[in-house]
Amino acid sequence: MIGRRLLQILPVIVLATFVVFGLLQLVPGDIAVTLAGENATDARIAQIRQAYGLDQPFFVQYGKWLWNAAHLDLSRSYLSNEPVLDQILHRFPTTLLIVSLSLTISLVVGIPLGIVAATRPGSRLDTFVTSFASLGVALPNFWLAMILVATFALNWNIFPATGAVALSKDPSKALLHAALPAFALAAGGIAEVARQLRSALIEILSSQYVRTLHAKGLSPTAILWKHGLKNVSVTLLTVVGLLVNRLLGATVVVEAVFAIPGMGSLIVHAAIHKDFPVVQGVVLSMVVIVICMNLLIDILYAVLDPRVGRA
Image (cartoon, rainbow, N blue to C red; front, side):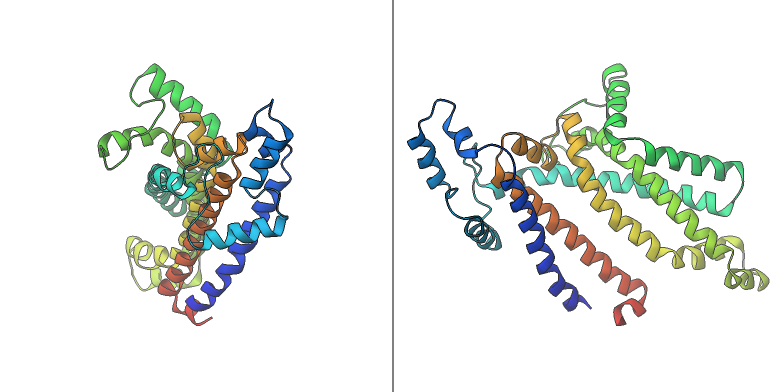
C-alpha cells in the first residue's frame, strides 16, 4: 500500500506545481517592469527579463524551475535575492509551532466534548456542545483573532499582541506568543472534532454490538473506552488529517492579523510584491507537507485497521 501511495504522490505534486506556476503567469503586470522601476528604459527591462529567464517560453521556464526544485533549489527571491529555501526554513518553525499548538488544543478540548455529548444524547449538555460546535465552525478565524487581540492583549495585557519568538531561543515566550493565534485557529478545530466524534460515538454506542456488551454485564465506562473509542479511532484520525491541512491554509490569515513572521505572512508579502519564486516555493512546500500528512494518515489507517492495508 505504501509503495502504491508513493507512486501516486509524484503526479499530484507535479500537477499542483504546474497549476500554481501557470496561475502566476496570469497575474496582471510585468515583474520585469516592477524590478526595473518606473523610469527604466526598454533596454533595462529587456535585460532584467533575460537575466531572470522571463523571456523564455512558459514550458521552458516551468521545466527549469521544476528540475531545480527536485534538487532542492527553489530559486532566489526577486526582491531580496535570498535563496527561497532559506526563507522557508527560517519561517517554517514558527508556523509549525502555531499549527501544532492549535491541533493539540483542538484535540484536548474537542475529544472530551464529543465524548460527553455522545454519552448523554438529547441532554442539555449535548445541546450546549452541539450549539458550541456550530458556533465554532461559523466564526471566521480572522474575526476571532481580532477579538482575542483586543481582549487578552490590549485590554487585559495577558498575551503579546503581535510577533513571535523562536522556540529554540525561549520556549516559554514562544508558547506565549503562539497562544492567541493557536486559539484563534483551534475554534473551528474543536468544533469539528467534537461534532465528528459525537456522531461516530452515538452510532456505535447505539449498535446491537454494544447492546450485547451491556447484556453481558460490562460497565458503560469499559464499553466506552475499550470498544467505543477504539472503533471511532479511524474516524478521528481522518478528522485530524483534514484538520492539519485546514490549519495550514488558515495560518495565512491569522499570521497577518498577529504580524507573525511565518509561512503565511511570507506568501502574502511575496504575492503582493509579485515575488513569484517565493510564492511558488511556499506553495510547493505546503503541498508536500499536506501530501506527506495524508501518507502518514494512510499508514496509521493500516496500523489501526489491517483490512485497510490489504485493500
